[in-house]
Amino acid sequence: MPSATHNLVLLLLFIHRLISISTVGLSLPPSPALTLLPSQTLPTAVDFGATTHSLPLAVLRPSSPSDIASLIRSARLSSPPLPISARGHGHSINGQAGASGGIVVAMSGGARRRMSPPVNSMEFGKTYVDVWGGELWIDVLNWTLANGGLAPRSWTDYLYLSVGGTLSNAGISGQAFHYGPQISNVFELDVVTGKGELVTCSQDDNSELFHAVLGGLGQFGIITRARIALEPAPQRVRWIRVLYSNFTSFTRDQEQLISLHGQQRFDYIEGFVIVDEGLINNWRSSFFSPSNPVKISSIGGGGRVLYCLELTKNYHHTSADSIDEEVEGLLRELDFIPASVFTTDLPYVDFLDRVHKSELKLRAKGLWEVPHPWLNLFVPASRIEDFDRGVFRGILGNNTSGPILIYPMNQHRWDERSSVVLPEEDIFYLVAFLRSAVPGSSDLTKSLEYLSDQNRQILKFCESAGIDAKQYLPSHRGRSEWRRHFGPDKWETFQRRKAEFDPSCILGTGQGIFHPSSCPFTSSLLPS
Image (cartoon, rainbow, N blue to C red):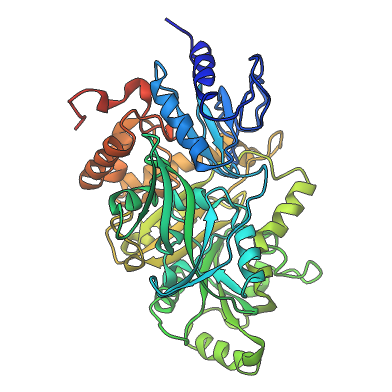
């Protein structure tokens, strides 16, 4: 039987008739598009999670969607078919963007693509911008601000992520309660399917593919263009933090705030859990002054766990005179610890790019490129207090090794036709354990093994307590776990879409859902 490498060589020779390529060890004219990389130290073999290693045989750096389409069509003809995965900025956590023994499509980096100017559309009734799927959100922001003072409406906390990457998951931050996730703020996509077909899709045209790809974990196609909704960008942000010792008050206030409409509301609502003394100052430490640190003991919370509610109110210079009154009116209705209000004021762009400042500090200390055993859960609001007792006040102990976010969202801001899996309640919480392992640390609670085991304990607790939590940025082992993740109806839809748009199962194999070597759609029998 021919080896995978032999098949790849034949594949490259075939593709050469379709696109310009270069390889190591093949006598083909040099070009930057496709490179055979036998090194064991490939940058595409490890992602931000740094907990898995997935070595591809080659990397495609496409110059156009047709390069990707040609690659996929050729990969399907290989025997066996070769796995293909798109990779943006490499910020997946569990090797989801990997293509072991296959080809990674490097969507970000390389030559910069010129974005088109924003368009005020009569058809959509909105302003939008068309961007390449590998474009980073920070570059989209800078471009739209420079061309009309506009900005996307919904964000992630970290902007150095690719457009296609976040749209393949959902894309959430503290604005999602009002605008919905990023997948609810895109009008149109260009997608190269697992058949190698380049398709334009939207709510009205090829809608099945449109909804499949949004939150689809890279299973149905590679996003090459996205039409992103824009709005006039505010100039400044009033950034507020208040502290709670009572979890019920904390969640009640959050749920009240996300129910507000119109101008009398905050623009961003997140929260985080504080179970150790240093975290309040270290997490997004640009907020607090290092010369004036906040001590948990000085707040008077009376307990080991505190909860921080983080809020913003956007404004323009022309409304600066009224911002204090607006914020004070909203805060007056909340039940936080008295005298625990901390505020700062900064440009809108600086707020959106706040996590990047922490990244630079961690890189300087050698603490950025370390394992990140993150766990992100959607927890139904009806069970969030049980989760608090069992996890925040139970499993975690008194050390977190990183921030723990907790904030609610409104399900009606999400489109149920997308591939994302949500709890079946009107309000649900994101609980994100964004921890970092420190290799070589003498503190065992900072080890990858300890944090990974704690993640397993949290998942086991949810299962035993009957809390129907759903993983965001999910990682499951085997198709049976994925069936349980999706539930019967969603799994049936997901499987049907896979059979339609990627019948050879070559896309997104790093997710561990499907693989060409065991693709169920090559026979007439589908698994139950």
